[in-house]
Image (cartoon, rainbow, N blue to C red; front, side, top):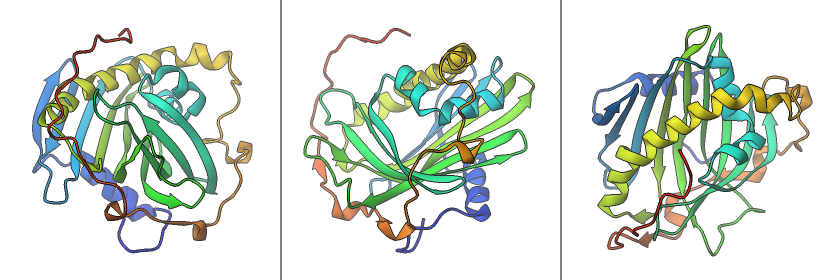
Length: 262
C-alpha cells in the first residue's frame, strides 16, 4: 500500500494481489511435495521476506476454506501458533482491523501485528488480504516484536464442488535480522506444515460449526457483525522504520520436541 493515508483496498488492489499470487517469475521453488509448493524471494536491502505457498485441496470446497480462514473463534482452536487474536473494529462491509500475535521458533522473540484486512468473493473464488496499520490504543508490547505486513493474504480458487486451490502470499518485514536457519525452516518445514494444518481444519470445520453458532458468519452476512465501526482517521500506515529492529541473526536453533500433534 503506497502513500501515507490508510485506504480500504479497491478492485485494482485485489486484481494486483491475484496477479502476484499467480506470478512465478522471480520466485524460487524451495519445497514441492504432496500437492504443496513453496516459493521464496531473496530479501532485498529492506529485509522484506517474501514467501508464497500453494496447496491443492481435493477434499475441501472453496466456500469451506473461505469460512475457516475468516472464523476467528475456530482459528483459536486449530491454529497452534496463535498467542492472541481479536477483531478491533469494522471499516466497511468487507474490511476490518484486527490484532494477531504468534509464536516464533525458539529462541526468537514472538511477533505481533495490527492489520487492516479486506476480502472479496469472486464467484466461487475468494481473496482475503491485509497490510499493517497503526492504532493508538494498540501500541507495540514490551514482550513482543511488532512485525510489519507489507501485503499478506490468501487466494482461494474453486476447482470443483469439493476441490480447491489455496495460495498464501506473505510479504513481511519481521523487524529483525533473522538467522538463515529460520528462513530455511519457514519455507521447508513451517509453511508446508501450516498449509496441512489449514486443510485438516477445513475437513473438521462443518462438524465443529454445527455445535458453535452455525448461522453466525459475519464475513458473509455483514448485518450480523457486532464490531464497533472505526473511522479511517484513527488509523495510520505502520512504517517499519519507526519500530524496534533487533538482531537475532546469531541465535542458534533450540532443540525442542514438537509439542503439537500433526
